[in-house]
Length: 306
Length: 307
Image (cartoon, rainbow over all chains, first blue to last red; front, side, top):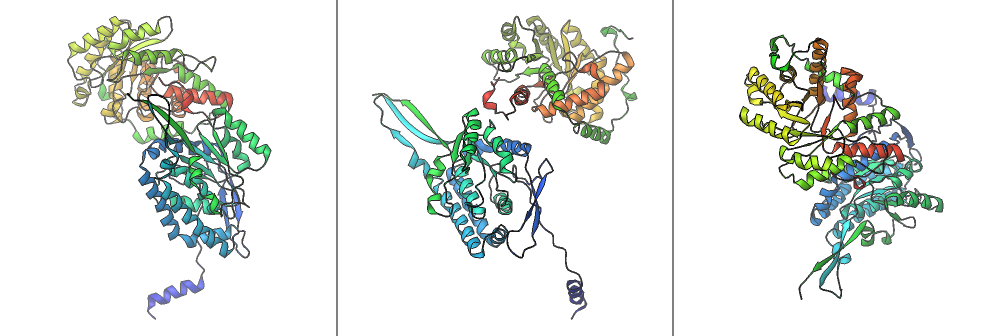
């Protein structure tokens, strides 16, 4: 044994190395800031036998405000990017996610998944990204139309992104373990040229913030996707009432919450989309109609000579 | 108290000016940005900010229609919010003064005009004087002139001084704001020197920038200029105004400036008569904040008129 390897050997046996653990922070405008409020909550592993613990940011209204500002500032240029480019970027997300599957399987297990389920969920998440990447230059053809009119006009309707989409988290049980439900809501929103602010479920923050790292590594311009952790109860009313948010996606079941959201959203005529009945692992949870839901139809009357 | 006539004003001895401590300025500015502003103070500051704005359009593409629209905005900032102050002035090119005067008649909003070959200042003295006189005869209440940065950088201080004094005389009763264009002066020392020159030559206001050069107004340069104003006030008792312009587009930043103003010059300067913001997009951001203070909802620019 050489002296050097001896020394290494010694350090390994005598003193256990202190693990450097990751700080889970927010994802706003392509950066990872801590919450401005300084508040956090403790996350402990749901899986048996794990001692994993992490402090997770409890986002405040100001974090949400900052996220909306970031989403708004980049929305026009993201919508102006070609469909082909947006598709490529979504596909890149799938590539990087595939590359990091072990990390996500590990985190899904910490969030309560079985090994089998975690594998299945990561597979489905990657496939869903590829699915929406493929739709990027095709949904327009399906939903746009030349309309028959009885006048001297060439009349056609096309889809335009609604703008900034705020997404409240799926409930933990339907969402299974956190990754698929998130991707199934973010991907159809951004593929159509929207930007979004996503709040993750309190019980499933790890995969959300790690997915933010995937986003950051995938040519998605900063601000297109913003991810917050924290309390759904606390932020719901703000998501629904912010006047610079154009569309709200939520999965609330209770009539009371639905009523409250709709009332607040009416303030600026937000498009409200309720996906409470969605089963994210089923094929029905991927559809071009999910893209169409966060789009506005623009109809143009173009005069023609006869 | 010094009541020297302007024609008798003398070139100050610039060699006596102490060098600016840049690190100190940076640290001081950082402190201004950490004040906690409570809601009530914030409301007051926001309204004060509105009343200090020189709503500005200085583009080659300005049309009479655009200027009329800007004046409408100045008069009706946001009708759904009652009790708002109006802005201090609208700021336009000399050829647009007539249009602005027509649009603002019967309203207590002043008309400011740039002059002296804005923004570069690259022209002869006689042309600059002519332009100034033209602007005054058209009805401008305030003249925003630019100094000759070339002369300033070449060290021809007396030329800069004489020019400002001559323009001041041509202004007559109109207020004179002297734009130093700090982005082209390079160092804080030169900003301080130029401030002294302008103040001694008879400026009613000193102003940071044209808005055409980056960097435009920064808190650092503004602080150095405020200090020049303060020292002049202590020496002579004369109050000179300050106008940072360019790049101040958020309420938060505007409030930082007000904090700096209050802590450098005191309450006397917290008035549109002695402090202005040169800005085009600041007004809407302030209005959005005021609206939010009223109904508690985060606002969208979609619901505020563009100017």
